[in-house]
Image 1 (cartoon, rainbow, N blue to C red):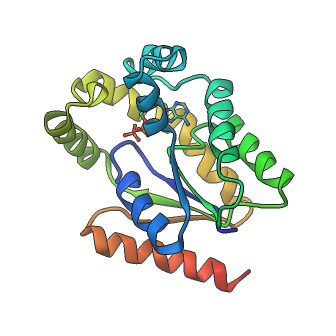
Image 2 (image 1 turned 30 degrees about the vertical axis):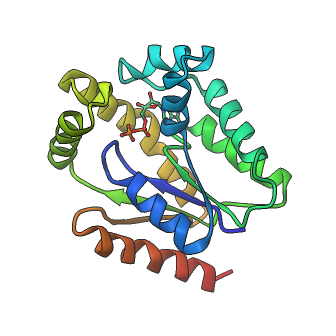
Image 3 (image 1 turned 180 degrees about the vertical axis):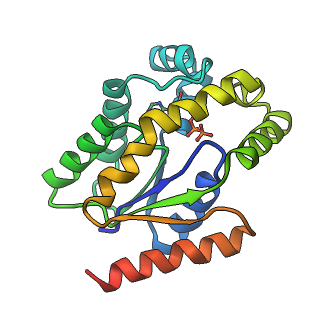
Length: 194
Ligand code: ADP
C-alpha cells in the first residue's frame, strides 16, 4: 500500500494536492476537516461536537477524531492506499495512526510537508473566507488561533516522522503543478527505496 500524510499549516494547499495525488496513484483521500464539515452539515451529534471546537479554531479531541478516521478507513478494506490530509495533527493521533496501520501490516511511506510562510497563510485563509464562506476562515482571531495550535501541537508530528527518515519539506508556494511535481518526486524516490 501507498500511505502518505500530506502535512502543512492551515491554508497550505493540502486539500488541492491530496486530490491530485489520490487520482495519480489511485488512493483514497481522507480529509478529517471535510469529514467533520460533512457531519456538521447533517447536524449529527458528532457534527455538533466538532463545531464547538472548530468554530474557535481549536482541535477536536483526539479520541473523537481517531475513532472517526478508523471508521472511515474500515469502509475501504481493499484500497491501494490512503492520503491523510489534516491528520495526524497531534502526537497521540500520529501514534494511533501508526498502530492502526501496523495492525494491518502497513506503514506510512512518507510525510510530505508544504512549506508556506505565515503572511501568505493569513492572506490565503482570509481570501478563502471571502470566497468560500467557511466560518473558521472569516475571523482573523480564529485564523491566528489555528496557526498557534499548528505550531504548538501539530508541528511536532513532523519531527516524529523525521526520526524514521520519513518527513520531507517541499516548497508550498508556486503553481499547483509545480508543487505537485515536488510532491510526486518525493513519492517516487520513496517508492524506489522500498
Ligand atoms: P485547515 O487545514 O485549513 O485548518 P481543515 O479542514 O483541515 O482545514 O481543518 C478545519 C478544522 O477541523 C480544524 O481547525 C480542527 O478544528 C478540525 N480538525 C480537522 N482535522 C483535525 C484533526 N486531525 N484533529 C483535530 N481536529 C481536526
